[in-house]
Length: 259
Ligand code: HXC
View 1: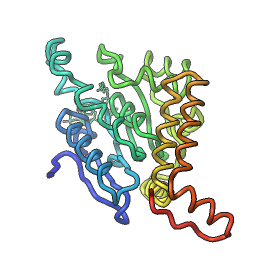
View 2: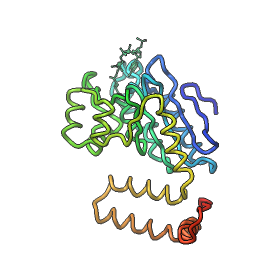
View 3: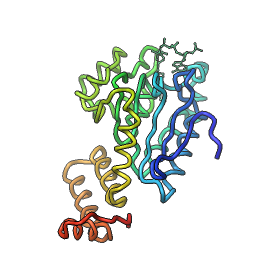
């Protein structure tokens, strides 16, 4: 499939990289771009050679939000009737292999929400996160009011959603929104390094770990722990569990076969 608004490539044959590519509009997210992003991630997810994905933007902007020009004239009938947002924004949540957001520059509005839909965020030191929708007379519409408080707590989430103030990379790491902060010129090395680490690990366990951590946001503690325990038990049926434990006991390097 040919993509116009994103660039797609693979690294070391194992990492699927998607780069948002509307630099002049600071990667403002329109329907076509979100369709392309969803299609690219689904294709990587279905490709047995791919073990992990990285979504990134440009130096200046991961994404400055939904495309305001495209939305400006919409009324309720268009956004509700046309299923704006949910039609193609949730695809990223259906992907079962890990997706890392490598964020430099602005991650605002839908851009911040897109980063938060990924499994974890690695940020460059120039990254800035925000939910400034309130200044446009709207509120976040792709999970910002739900995922941000889970990531940074109520007080900071309210502060950002109500005042539109941005959080820099240092604050974002301190608050738990991002997992690592690195110098801008090291961002892709760091993200690809993390992705390649994941690719080398047993894929069924990787998918189970992602599924189980995600379940913690959807369920109470005892149900979540039971869900985790069943996945933990199930992994003892995999060849890679035998290989990983035999290799440890035998003091040799494991050869995982992702089955
Ligand atoms: C469309 C955008 C855009 C956006 C920037 N541009 N953000 N176009 N939608 N979200 C365009 C500008 O119009 C401009 O185009 C070019 O990108 C460069 O932007 P500048 O404003 O000139 O750059 P700068 O002065 O550096 O300011 C950067 C900025 C600012 C602080 C990021 O652009 C900004 O505030 N953008 C809007 C951020 C925002 O409100 N996001 C939330 C959107 S609502 P021209 O043609 O003039 O060069 C949203 C809802 C999500 O995301 C709901 C779920 C989907």
